[in-house]
Amino acid sequence: MNELFFSYIEGRSVLHRLDPRTKLVSVMLLSVVVLGASSSQDMVLLSSAFLLFALLAKQGIKHHLNSLRPMLLFFIFIFLVEVMFSESEGLFYLGPLGVSYEGLWKGMLVTSRFILLVLFASLLISTTSPSLITLGIERMLRPLPLSLLGISSYDLATMMSISMRFVPLLHESLQQITEAQVSRGMDLRRNPLKAIPSIAVPMIRNTLRVTEDLAMAMESRCYQGAYRTSMLELDMHKEDWLSLLIVAFIIILFFYPPI
Image 1 (tube, one colour):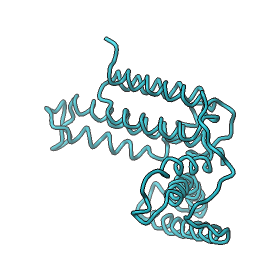
Image 2: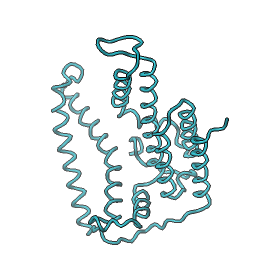
Image 3: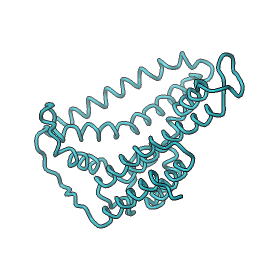
């Protein structure tokens, strides 16, 4: 399972020892900063921050870059949309659509934002176990009056944790189904549209089966959304406050760059 993207990798690095709330808050703040990035200097600063945290995690950059592979087509689509539909004078034309310098810059900027968002999310998930992510989210949501909406912080945290856990499992299932169909003679390159039902139908069946098994496992353990105890206790340490200060410093550099 450690070879899957968006999966937890056990370790003893500084990031592994941090409180999950520290990492969750840091990723949320950095995500807001990423979405507000509008210059090459901003992207260099945020990329440097990611490289710094990746080095502290002692996992290697390759694992996090693998998390980008399943979304490669999505990144290409975003880039092409920004390039083709930018309202500026075209550098050259592809039929009725024009490609301009401004469109190329916007395409690279928007695509870079999404790439950094995925990389920071990968860094969070690879250094925090699913149980700690669930506990951290629950502790952060507990003060909110969610009972007025008919839900509890435990239910919401569990749903988020399960959703993140399902991403690598679904990707692994897709790879297995694709390899099985190719071994039976299916040609993805020659007939891509005809191959979609051959992959989608077993994929949906596997997803429903895994979901049903998970629901039965939770029911057999008497899961309920009321107050639940935990074997883990969260406590903020000096490393957590120092990490938040580093993130705050990065945000200050972003909004108030040195002259």
